Image (cartoon, rainbow, N blue to C red):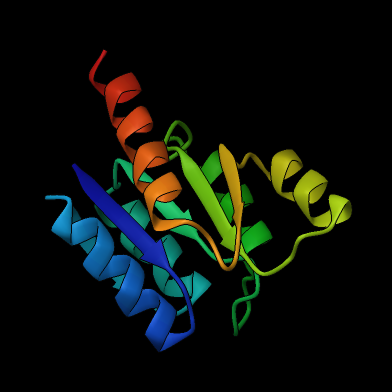
Length: 124
């Protein structure tokens, strides 16, 4: 299973990448929304782990919206991992098409369980 990580903070991106790779998944990690959209459209991942506060022209909300409107990525689960923990951000992410929402700091075990759950759905 291939997972795309879109996270601008190097330390968090590398930690998520190591965590998911240690579980045996293939990982591609990028530092901004534009790269995330490009990678996903060229070679759609099975799951996207997406930060909301990203530098550049696309924040995580816009990345999620664009993934949902592209036929090649419209069904790919998008798991938000964000420091934003308010109802407005959660509602906005849900409206953009997010599958799940985790706040930083997040539980690595909970995130891996979510990925495993999504994998089981994909394989059914």
